[in-house]
Amino acid sequence: MEGIPSVELFSKPQYQKLRERWCAGMFGKGYSRYVRTCEVGINETTNDLHADFFLKEQSSLWPFQIVEVQDSGRKRGDEYKGFADGSIKTIQYSPEKGHVEGPEWLKNGIVKKVNKNYAGSENLNLLVYANFTARQLDYSRLESALEGFKNNFSSIWIITGTHLCSVHSGQELGEVKGWGEVRNFSDYYA
Image 1 (cartoon, helix red, strand yellow):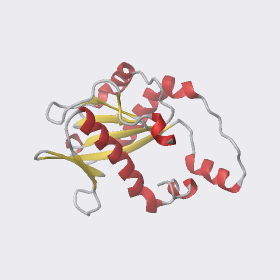
Image 2 (image 1 turned 90 degrees about the vertical axis):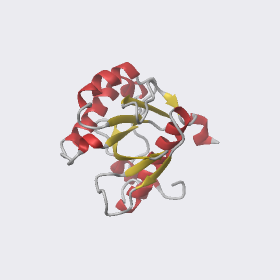
Image 3 (image 1 turned 30 degrees about the vertical axis):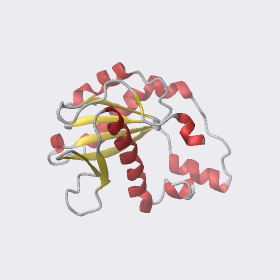
């Protein structure tokens, strides 16, 4: 992804599967670290259109849907276009906003997925990419905010750029209660 200008990566549909690969890869790395060794693969077939990727561990195959949640009101495509054409130089940065409002943003993102009324969604697992400054996002507040979705998806997992957790998951798939570090922040700036 490094070689693709951000204005293209985040606005052109041809890069959708690449962004999904990143999410699935981060999830697979964290799952392997905290639950069990696994493989992940993007669904590039016309079968099981509701699954964005699959997690395989031992003899089980788990279908996952991905949803990205950003800072409420953020228009990332417009930001990158503005940076590219020079019409904007900076954007407002409020590091505590995600910590305070993040659980509600995540809840709203999941509501949008639920409203799509996927057939058999209770058999799908949901991976939510919290693409906002989520430093010190309180796990217990997350569990509370997302508790009402237990009947909508088989499991719900959250990833950030560096961490992973599950807010509900069955014993068969496993779980990560609390935040587990997948990548250190310094990995991004080696």
